[in-house]
Figure 1 (cartoon, helix red, strand yellow):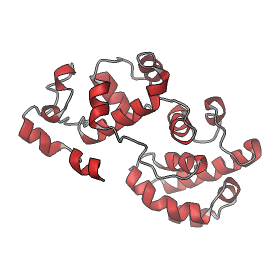
Figure 2 (figure 1 turned 90 degrees about the vertical axis):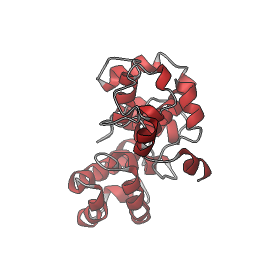
Figure 3 (figure 1 turned 120 degrees about the horizontal axis):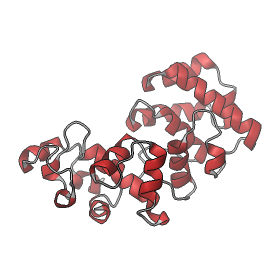
Figure 4 (figure 1 turned 180 degrees about the horizontal axis):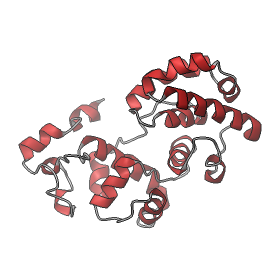
Length: 222
């Protein structure tokens, strides 16, 4: 199933724009309860105004809230980002630590966020159990667990560690584009023949194709 999905999405990647571990860490924190597209609209201005951890820690709260307002929950997110910047300055000399054990001690950073940063900013394999990943691995029958940490460990045991980051990207891409939460496009899915949950969604190929969020050809040529 993974090989077929990898063939469909060989270009799968982190859809948050970033140029440094700090930028990815902040962007991932901001992505809660909003889309990556929205975060990518906000972060260029945010990072131009506050380029490092010290600047984030010392930000003008009202100004940052205004910048983050489009992402939703902007007051809580402003608080998280400012506390995150302060913790990085106080405990890690303003640098993002490349260890999961350290990352999860930071304000607003859990295992999901830590694995995003490790896998994409540091090249350290990690499994990102977001809502898409969790939904798909349960539909695929890879695990019956709902707890993200248990899902991470059970699915991680099925794959070589070197594949964990790309596995996360591929499943998240498929979850966003085809295997939707409410109505998966089963009839347009390349692994329908292998999926124990086939039939949970639209099985008619024509109707299913209309449910796809993006056309593969358009993405591949982008």
